[in-house]
Length: 422
Image (cartoon, rainbow, N blue to C red; front, side, top):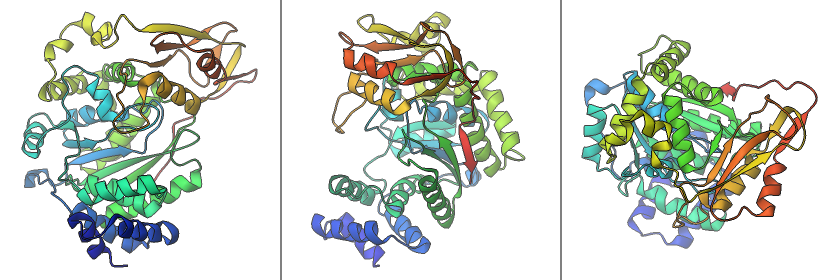
């Protein structure tokens, strides 16, 4: 296939939308070889500007990307934790369609947080602090912006070569030396089966390596929510608790394992296990939290917001007094066998935490806060989730939330989130 001329035509407008769609449909129907996927991604990343870093950072510029899920807030704690361990993290993130906002939306629930930094400001902040979490500028991988828009309206999203090119063109344009991809698998994930997830993981790993990035992939379970918080402000508060060493075990596990892989790739850890311990220490000794506060201040937040212990403990003012709360109780006692992340995510989105269209306005404060996890024991009548909402909670939403909890008389072992590391 004539890949470079196609990408050139996408960017300069010499190809019509119909011509672009026809080319994309050919790929959707017939796929690309490993070499062609690398060629496509390379052309897409060089369709716009690429970030350049000092030579002394040759092996230190790293990042992580997730395919998303319910309660998926790991990047918010991981970037500052990595910076505390000595690597450079120019995290170019995105917004969310679906259950809740994406990483950028969640951070924007913090008053003053600005995601739009110019390249020179990104460089300055990464130099001074070690990390930033910002949005994609129009100059980075412009070919992807047009290709994705056409894929979105023509049903051409679920193509492994096109997904690979879309994700990695933007990440590679950030000038990374190492990348960890978190590919979620399960009912609340883009990839529903492990076979589908592995196929995407192999494509991402081989293409990333073909572009000169050390690329690893974690396959992680996405059937029950990650952590306890679902919703933009609620997930920020849980991220801060994680940075204070008080986070949920499953969230901390993901952050430590993925951070450990990147520290090993950067040569700052003996191996990923050593690196995981370094990340764990940063979460528990205050250094990761300090980097997070510095990052927020660098991106427009008044650092006085974090100065008061009382302010942190009372939610930084992110949850207003007009919110209603409804506590949902277990209908039966036993050991929790399942909490349906997909159904809870859909409810959260309908309450206002997510968007259907890119220009929808999010309600940053609504969401759900769980009081239990898979493997926990619960009594009949125990409260297991608090719903933060506007107005009255509908009977339909209440019933759907109640139906998300499955209990059993038999003991249930809480499994690791991580299925495999590639």
